[in-house]
Image (tube, rainbow, N blue to C red; front, side, top):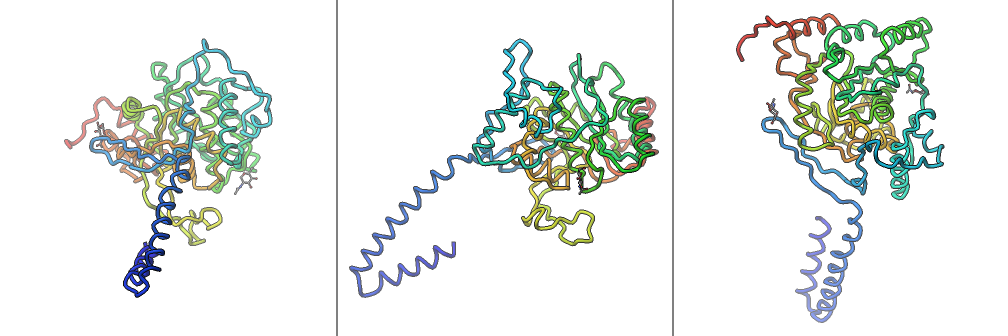
Length: 400
Ligand SMILES: *[C@@H]1O[C@H](CO)[C@@H](O)[C@H](O)[C@H]1NC(C)=O
Ligand SMILES: *[C@@H]1O[C@H](CO)[C@@H](O)[C@H](O)[C@H]1NC(C)=O
């Protein structure tokens, strides 16, 4: 803008100067210059098609965002029915391993997708920068075998949080115990050096059968790895599931309400993330802050929009897309900014904001949760209390 304004001033001087002839020559050159400017950028922008995703949910707030589609829109991850011809497994086992897929579980359609995806990314000069090739210490590989699962729930948790896991198993995760609800609840862990703690996890995994543990160090700065572990698990072991939910272990989740909302959103399109949105937030630069981000880790002034990590849901198609894309997006320890912001932008997965998801702490009260999907920062006792009240057939709530 500034540039153009000073330029006009120059022209002004030239036209009103005495050298009319020179000014005509100059303006001719200038016109030619303008014309060439207006044609050249076109060739540059054809590769990145910008479009606006606008998902309007009546009263709910809406995330309107400009996504860069970047030529990946033709890869839609829909696992083929078994009647379709099996794609050949490419010989590139190294790629398979780098992407962190377990050797014994080569899912032919996924191998083909990964291969296709990788060659697209290579064409665009993108490198596999964030391989997720950790080994499973505990896994539940058969959770989806022989059944059509509607919802996978992944709860990132630490070895020491046994009480939190138990409260979830005995409350909202009960939803998955009813065979008419096709849901699976799994806990995602890394490893801590504490030997006794690991023995407890081993026993818990055996007894409860819901522990997925990978061999990365379980630290706060490695939190994003647990979310990537979840979308990877869905991609490998349950690609035919419909939805995936990520919820922290201090959350109460109103499962029936969540599913009503997810099914409703699915009718609008197969690719979305759903949750509480954070818009135009800036990174904390003060080193003393728990969430401090250095300029090396993230240079920009603002984060992309993202969904609160307390709880967010997505289609499993979106989960697969996020997993593959995460391999090509540099790691950031803030898992929600990373997966639902940076990676989602690259993967062109639209975020849908829903005010039923919340990162505020609500009073631990069944009535409060009747029209909510999630709250935050509830203790194991509170989680049990909310559940008991919410599902109490005699629950009477004040009007409103
Ligand atoms: C969100 O939108 C849905 C569908 O349009 C509507 O049924 C629901 O009541 C809305 N929720 C809120 C909190 O406005
Ligand atoms: C994350 O886990 C990896 C693998 O165990 C480890 O090498 C690394 O030091 C951890 N990073 C942080 C910041 O804790």
